[in-house]
Length: 370
Picture 1 (spheres, rainbow, N blue to C red):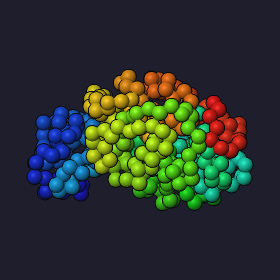
Picture 2 (tube, rainbow, N blue to C red):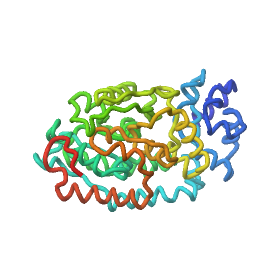
Picture 3 (cartoon, rainbow, N blue to C red):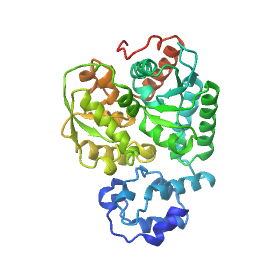
Picture 4 (tube, rainbow, N blue to C red):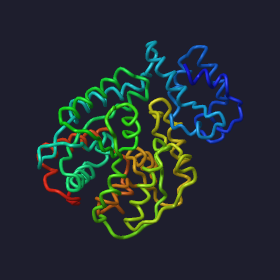
């Protein structure tokens, strides 16, 4: 319990983190009091508290001692799993989604033109559930700019990692490494910032963000040339990824759009409410976090994380994924589309796999065809 011990020893109870964190505000306890509570053993209520942190890392940026309550909560979650007290019954859906995706979504194939895979595109499960069209169009672009790009459809393992299930997470990583090795790839290009954050730390294979690749190799023609102003939401998983954040801003401006920099962006980015799997343990808190963030937006919201986009859409806030601006000519209508339900997500994931197996990615370039 390294971070728990550090918090007990070094927290000065200045409340800098409490003032900015919806999770800590609702506890009526200082971080050191929470740490002592966890150290004494976890009741059912304590377990729910440990699973109610979004793990966004904002506390560490605010704390004069660089203490991280999220890291402590993750340590507690791992302990709960080891003791058979975690994850919570409400997390059962995570395992169900993981098993369903493994049986119905998983795919690892080389570039259909060359039959090779010097690198692979890894769109992630949430973007695939949000829009198969965006994944296919992005993959066509990548193969046109970087011939010899394969694709892997799978989960990065972040949900298992987040709830403290290290065994399942390790199994997911091992299968992904096996897929990469079989394809002969030496690099992974991720579309999801959460996948990037998770795999960069643990995969053991070089991981590059799609948005940095887009800037480096040139953008396809925009799906719609009409400029707009967006409130740009930074994914909290990119808190310390300045290069990725700068690439996103360069893309938006190159497409002819304007950016409203939201309060608490960059290193100070706030969670969208989906981080840490909070909604499974405390849906009310998850919605409150999302409402706080959406309330800071003076314009329609733009994100480069599909989970973030869906969190704001669930509230009825007009929102888009960055790739919509590149590959969806109807993005002005799409920004009002509701968040996807689980059945629709699974349908889209299965549809994407089928499309790729049946040659939907044939033909190079960034075409917008559905």
